[in-house]
Every structure is written in C-alpha cells, then in structure tokens.
Length: 352
Image 1 (spheres, one colour):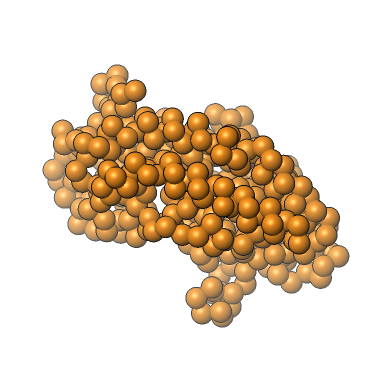
Image 2: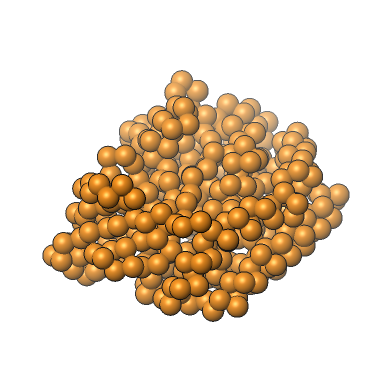
C-alpha cells in the first residue's frame, strides 16, 4: 500500500522563527495540503518532550478541521507502537486517537514516513458523539493525582501542576484541584462514595488495564487526557503518547516484560484499588482482556498489517537511526513481549 502524502509549506521567515527555539509552544503560519492538493492555512509548531532535540522533529498542526500530530516516531524502530496501542485501547472500550501512517514533505523536501495522530480536542469528541465540557492534558509527571511533587516529595505549589486546561473555564480547573485534594484527604468510607460520584470507574479500570498490558511506564502519571461533561461532571480518561510500549521504553531501548507492576502507578489508582469491590472489578476486566484481546492471535494481524504498510517507506528513509535489520525483527520482539507479559500478568493475577 502506498502511503498518503502530507505537504507542509512554510515561508522562510516563519520557518526561521520556528527553528530559533525548539522548546517554544508558539505557532507559526503555514500551509498544508494532502492527496487532494488543496492548500489550507494552518498553524504549525514543534511537539514532544526530549524528542524536540532530535534531528527528526515531530509537529503539531492546528487547522479549521482540528488538530493533528505528525510524529516522527524516531525512537521506535517499527513506527507502529503508538498506532498499535491506540487500536488496542479502542478494542477494550477506551476512546483513543485515530492514526494513519503518511509521508511528510516540508517545503518540497521529503522527510520520510510519519505517523499522523488525531488530536484530542473538541472535534475528537464531536466525531464520536461524546459530550465534553472540560478537557485537561496531563503533560508531565506532576499529574500524578498527588499533593506532593514527585521529584522533591514536597507539597506542590499548585494542585494543577502538570495539567493544561484545553476546554473549560476556571471553575473546571478549580473542580479538578478540589478533586485531587479530596482524593488525598478524605477517609476511606467517604472517599469511595466520592469516587463513585466523580469517576467513570469502568472507563478508568479499562484504561488502567490497557496501560498495564502495554507497559507504558510514562502513561500513569502523565501522557493522558481527562475530560468530563455536564451535568454529571464525571471524569473519564483517554490515553496519549504510547511510543514507549510493547517491549521498548520511550527511548527505544528494550525493556523487560516485568518492568511495570500489575496495579500500575499514581495515587488515584492506589486509592481505587484499595477498595475490595473496585479491585475485584479490575481483576475481572484484566482477566477478560488477557483472554480476548491481549493475545498473539488477536494482535499479530494488526502488527503485521501496520508494519507492512510503513516498512517500505522506512527502508528508503536514511534519516532514521535504526538499521533495517532491527526493524525486521520488530514483529518478533512485540510478539515475544506479549507472550511474556501475559505470563507475568496471569501469574500475578492469582495473588493480586
């Protein structure tokens, strides 16, 4: 299959402005066209964390039709881990961004294969018929649902640290801060009733199971989105940035299938799983996923399809850091990870 092409055009002055500071969150003006060759004005900026300093950059594009992310997937030899993860989450019932591999050109220069990822914004919810009155991005590990800074172990100066308000008002920010405070201070009996009134537990536990299966260590305290809708104001969660998963970490290094514990991380998860009823439900959800979706039989066709789709473009892209012999072994690495992870989780489910 031939990948679709996305063309970006950026005037020299705007391009120089963008390149001056890779850590800037400011947009520059640009134009985008796809296979239809119809140019549309867009806003363009770099995106990512440590990847901003890589020779192959990732981009965020804002247009009238919504936000898209163009990920270089530089640390992932297969370039499929994000796409596979979001497909997996959708299959277990957690709303997730749509993805599609493409070829990106910038001012006529072929930058090679990229992964186009649907932005989580107002249009994301409209496309799915989901009501959303408030949306928060968890951008760093301060978004751990704790009163304490994870680096200093001291009280945070603000309980909104780690979050970005994308949709909503100051009242929504205050409501989230109150939620984090109450989560950490209410006695158990009051806390459980409080959680039931403000958290979609089915959604959260499925998300937790998905993060645990894929071993995305960075996905528990950051790299997620919280949203709620009136009149219930119940929080629901969406995964984000799963490049470090399926047997490799966020730097592309091989990692053990035992590296992430069965209960995951963060304070909200700890509080939820301290309740016997919620813990039992989580075990049932995880067990069902292990029996149905998180198997080599279920996932191998998706792995092979995704890699077959993008591999020809990877093979002729001399800007990537991974040799093709490594790329060729990725299906084996991912399948081996799934088999070993299943054994680890099945063993720990018995005593959990």
